[in-house]
Image (cartoon, rainbow, N blue to C red; front, side):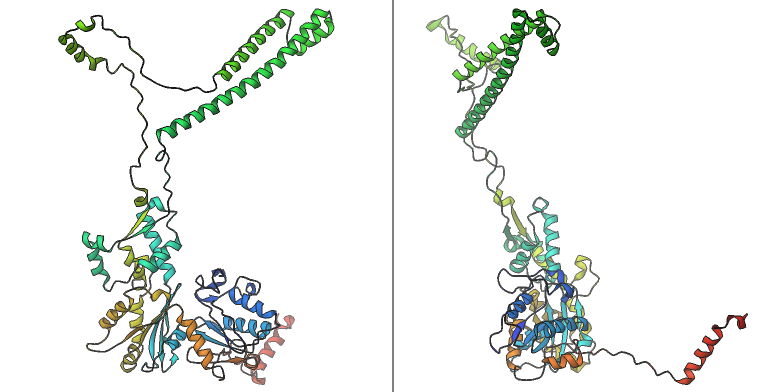
Length: 548
């Protein structure tokens, strides 16, 4: 929903449609929970949903009391009357809008791209984020009876591409997100003019190397052990050793304190025995769970020894605070009793036996080198895009690729054209117009031309045009229409029209839907002859005794 604010007497153009891709300004968007396939639902929740850009605009206008300028609003193709009724009620009753106009976004894009030599008729192919529409336009008006819709768009293509790459790269399952897939679709995908022939080209290794695209995923270049030198590892060992020493010293101090407290308690009980306080001495022995003074003396001796040993360990640890553990080769004594008189033969014989004793000799520790990764992390976190570049956008022409039992663009276009006479078909194919964000793939125009060439008669002519800006032309067209028709009554629904004809009322114009009013069946008047049988039936049913 794109809502630029109107200034002065200029109309305000609001575009509602394509949920999930709507923006009011950078950083402001609304969730798609309140719309379903271009249809706004949950109308009760919309006025309180402050993140909706259209509501933000209307609330800003409420500061002045009301919206004092007209509004142009887009709606879905063949929009239900109830949806239009609720929107009109919101605009006229709540915000006091003077007049409003409804139109279709793809028809506004068709209106904006019109040229002097363009015919008023054409076949509009609008493919957006959620679905694709085939809209025939005859003599400047939409033929709603023959409009067709395909429930496939950019969203389904992104989900399909995500599944393909997650199956191809299961190690990067979490990194292959839907937003990255949309980026790949916009920057790396294209429509193949001949899908089967293009797949055959991708079987060639040379073609694959020349046309394969790489996408770099984010990763951390820091690998455990890959950037540590031998000095850093030695320093880390020293730090761990110091931590262990501090932990052991803390435990010794705690043990020493606990043993000292117990020893003081036992010595106090022994002093009671020496002072002759036998009653208190026996009570203390019972509390200590001891039977005699000999057992008390034994515990005192053991605790005294333990306290002395703990003190010695603490003193030794304080002296040896820094301990360097070095594994070096032990020195071997010089076993050369013969000195310089040793012959060359003896030296050779000793060299023969050296391999036998080499295994028993301790090896000198070699300096630890930096651990190099066995693979390049950057290459491991790369996505190689091959046939996925054409498989994902191909679903709008072949929905069976994702298991959908729908017709593609080519089949639907042929079905729509066959509903017209040959003369009308020739008029429609002279202006096949492509619009919508999902038509920005390279090669789409050539693919539609190829499909038309196959379905049209021999040597028949047709023309395919692409919107100048497929994403923004709907807004530009609504703006152009609002400026051109500002002083006219055509297409504008006033408050008087709303009060007289209801909220579902629509004034048609060149870019609007077709208005089909609600036709309620009239009840036939009940005559006296028709009422007679019913009266007789009620009178007979009211007297059960007579029936018996």
